[in-house]
Image (cartoon, rainbow, N blue to C red; front, top):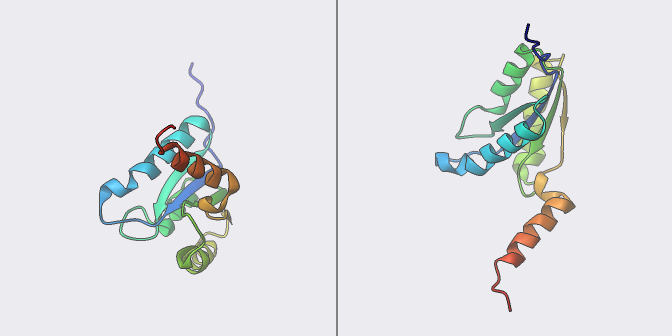
Amino acid sequence: MSQTSPAPHQALILFAHGARDPLWATPFEALQQILRQQRPELRVGLAFLELMQPDLPGLLQQLAAEGIREVSVVPVFLGQGGHVRRDLPALIAQAQQLHPQLAITVAQAAGEQPQVLDAIAAYCASTLPRP
């Protein structure tokens, strides 16, 4: 008799801008896979602001239908530009009205975190030829 694991009640959404070129999404899809491997008990989704699917409202609707109760949205942007400061809060407010059962939190832009900046700086420095 096999035992199935319970459906997750938490989800993590990586929120990216989107682009016309489908290859643009490759690093975000890789990040999603890394998180799924690290946290198999967690529902990890990837949503886009524009030009790619799924969009954030559609993914939040799907998660609500799956019975997810807690969602953390992480903007995988380097900074808090207009999309993160204006567009994202408007999308979240709309989603909260449509899905009041979802507890949605929004993290700061990933690129503003010291550990992310340290990793990027280390990579940039590593591109120099060794003396």
